Image (cartoon, rainbow, N blue to C red; front, side, top):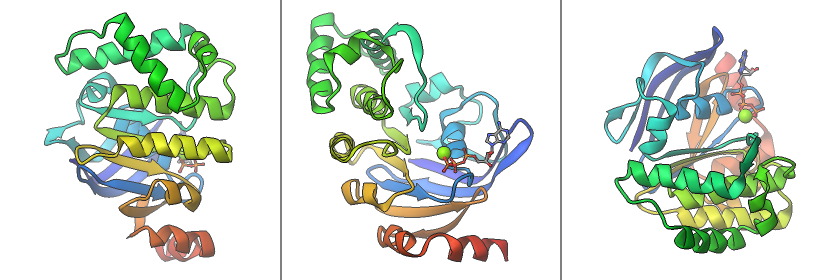
Length: 250
Ligand SMILES: Nc1ncnc2c1ncn2[C@@H]1O[C@H](COP(=O)(O)OP(=O)(O)OP(=O)(O)O)[C@@H](O)[C@H]1O
Ligand SMILES: [Mg+2]
């Protein structure tokens, strides 16, 4: 279970998160919506333990372990995965090699043996077929020259191979065409399980028709200003954020 309490965080001395309380139980999918610049990606970076993102107050704990002193690699080993809003290009490292290295690191953290090359090839072929990641993409350097939608599919391929227990998806739907949105959503839905928690950051209710959340939160100016069920996303689609943003400013 993920427990975020009164989380304040800053980057380069700029206060971005201003008191976030959020509990995500195993099996739950929480959606986070909110205007541009409200702090959604910042929250995802703080959760992932990205360098330069400093917690100034409050706490993050996962399965009872305080995460404040853990680095990004230790959090990943504990089951955290972040699908980036802007996936990073890694020139010189073939996607396939990257995926195998990442999977073996994760297996090691779980106390499992390295996966054999034939087993890995079989697994990656299966999963990439489902996510329409072509063999050609697997040979190319990670994300280099991938289209926006291809990058997002490669992120979800990585996620489905690693089988993290805490998945954070930052605008995975942005830039996806209609078919890719369905394919990616199916990939995410296959990972839904009673042991796994998910946080899905999105601007569009449309994604939540595919990945149906248990809870929807609205983030504004670094705080959660409204929490509701999936119907909240529909209401936002209709009325925008004005009600909540004004409420918060008052
Ligand atoms: N390194 C930085 N220095 C100064 N301000 C920053 C830095 N990083 C982020 N910010 C600011 O923090 C705020 C929150 O940014 P963040 O990327 O978390 O927003 P977001 O909710 O993800 O927005 P979007 O919907 O556009 O993705 C923005 O105003 C942004 O300009
Ligand atoms: Mg963002």
